[in-house]
Image (cartoon, rainbow, N blue to C red):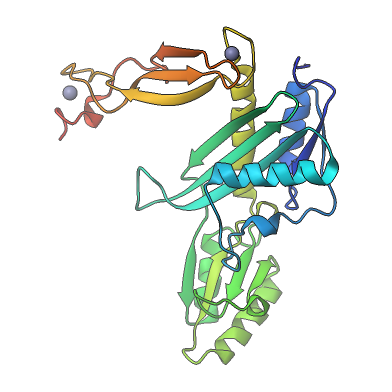
Length: 286
Ligand SMILES: [Zn+2]
Ligand SMILES: [Zn+2]
């Protein structure tokens, strides 16, 4: 399929973590674009998950900066970049969450369109352990060796020479854990899941989902001027409870806005449901 705004254009994908594996086939098929990865492109200058560089700004801003940098490097007009975050899920703080943002930046049409996926399907975890057996237990629980690990002296280690990333080999894991344990005055070593996409197939799957959501967002065009990316800008609560019919905090209407002409539209029941389950009602189930 060819998209009138994007067909036959080159999209620069700002990644050095092989995200093109999941992003390129989806965009090429849905938009008729050609995806290229510039070499070399150091996305780590924009912040990484392994603490050796602080992350700046929001996820969307971070993705935008990567996309801008890719355009500057290549002189192209269309770029895509993705940015992930990990931590307590905003709705369920006891559970780890992963939010992925995939952003399309189009200088020719002056557009930025975002796809997002928020999920609890992540192996994001860290633990300080006291023995090789504990380290192996942690590794097994987070899907090692299909998923990579980061091994470091402590949770607050700053010296990048002591932070061993991308561990996917059981023999190497054993060696680096034993060495770190032997060196540690406390007899401990800190383990983390490596969240870089090419070391984390679970995260790669979430990026794929966010890319599909991006395509969906691109396919929403403005009813007034047909510009793609007619964007959801606000969710308004008030969806009634099925049992007591009182309004709840769940979304009843969504407001969309065009980036180009500013036209807005309000849609009822954007999530496809008209009633809230009484289990989620603050009156029926306080
Ligand atoms: Zn418009
Ligand atoms: Zn109720």
